[in-house]
View 1 (tube, rainbow, N blue to C red):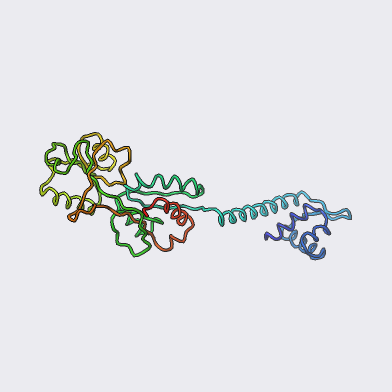
View 2 (cartoon, rainbow, N blue to C red; view 1 turned 90 degrees about the horizontal axis):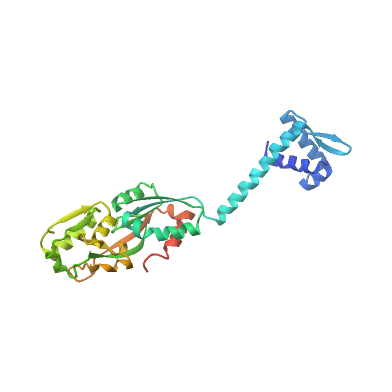
Length: 290
């Protein structure tokens, strides 16, 4: 039974009068009567009993009217939901984010995003930038937030730059590194990041660290440095104001310029057409470097 027929039966059940029902439906009484006969024939059941006083529902008619009412209500509900989709942001936002950014920069962004767009589901994966870039290449996510300078032919937007610092509770100048017995604490990272630090180290000291400890996570590395176990090279994005209890020496290149890492947002053009992606871009605009 078509929705237009369901609506017609609902009006007939409400009015129980052919004349008033035909007026509400903007059809003639003969046309309405003929349409009702066609519906009853299709159901192989009498829906209304006709009399001079009007219409009365049969037991079978009550069941059919119940079905018709349910169909009309479902249509109205779907229309309401479709209307809300035009004004509210729904769907799933799929993100692949470099771990450092995911731990230190992204939480505040997502907190604001969830507050503004509570109907959006967030799917988040974090890891090394090289791994996250592969997620974007495979079109497994809508957006990737990648550190370094990734080779990407799609949409690529700059987010932020963070400087590298040598962090320790005692070391106040770089030459103190050669005197200390503390280990150099490193965290596992992408080869490009690791190589950047190695290049700086050998340019600065022309020798290898006396002792080295390698840990899996940047947060472990940071906490070990904050607790005086050793010294570490950390990006500024991972350092907070409350970390002022340690010395932070900025790394400089051969020309005296700060050594820093850029962070980029990547995605295919099609992803940037999605409302949930556009909403995310709106939120992060308040958090990116100017």
